[in-house]
Image 1 (spheres, rainbow over the protein chains, first blue to last red):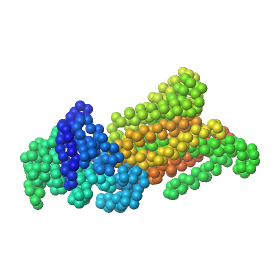
Image 2: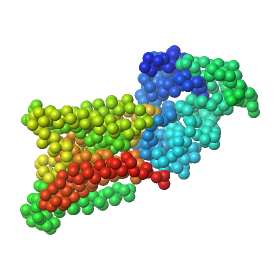
Image 3: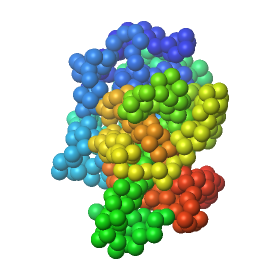
Image 4: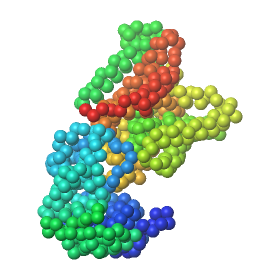
Length: 252
Length: 318
């Protein structure tokens, strides 16, 4: 379980998160949704110690994020963020290989190589493994970084908007892959998603943030209702049940 | 051994042979090893000079790539970001205020000044937008210009301008046994950086990715900065900085081999050593028996290569 307690965060005086308390259940996929500026990425950053915690506390399986060594956390929790700026000129295989770095610190063992192979295969990257990152498309790049997070083989995998840049095929393949991992009880996945339909289709738990506060949370079938989503995003959103799942219709 | 590394070693061996044979003193290659005078020349001048060129080239190339990974920008090196200028300022200060300081002390003060200069540069570019990579070298050039101007003014006031010229422009004709040995230390520091190769590569992925992989990012940053500063200061103190080595060599190698330092660092060191040595040999030949400083030759060629890297074709998808 990731336990978030009274978490507040300000950037340049502006409140991003305000006294947020919630539990992310272990196992399965948790989708974090909400409008732009709701604090989703900040929450991810704080949970993964990318940002220093200003107020409140986060515990990952009982380990306080602020007080646990960063090397130790890297074996419990992997995070893949959205990237800006210039791509590094690493080969895909080497990049995914660095996902094992927390485990071997420069001396890869056979099981590390095996984990890299699994991750490359899972994201359809075997053919691209010898290519440089700066010679890949945005989506291929994204997949390579997610594969690195996967190769880290941590209990928790945090993905900040993993579906950006991905085409329909690879978005579905990614969701199916992490769904399989979470079903097998291997990983607990927390992801920020913008397309509510992906959350509805794949997530076990949905957390909705608005203005740095918890708006609602629960199982997708129960919480993804027209009334709640319309209130969350401040627009009229229809929800129909199609093929047994809530499906958001926002073009009306 | 990888193919690029093998080629680098072969080229280097040829250049070493050339460097030992070429010089103002007319001694045949055979005499160098048989004649007592020839052996003396070899041990006192030719060998030290060859070693000095290789050590400074290799360590400046390593310093360059470490800086590029820490800054996450391909177009920086100590000479274009104020680190060399800061090292000179420190050296000038100690020359003016305490001229009797032993060389190691001078080196230490120069390295400390280089470290402060580099920290200042890093603090400055943190504020730049990440989507404008060309801003970083521009800010670096302005920053180094300001430090350089201050140093020049102080040197002018103290009538020490001629020193600046020797520190700024790498030149190996004055290298004799007993007067360049600090460079071995620079080479050692650059060699130790290899132990951190993985960490520097990860740091090149950015701060968030580094933290995610459990890297002690602040520590890696400091070790990198100290390495760059110490190497820069030692090269400036002993033979003078060779401009563009730290820029050109890592860029060429990264085009071919990528950024995985564990594989590419030895090639970068070898190519840096080879290119500086080649410039020095060329400088001895062009106006024989007079000499052109290696820094001048590398500066001219390096500037052209730098422009090509900035404006030329992007590496192709293979």
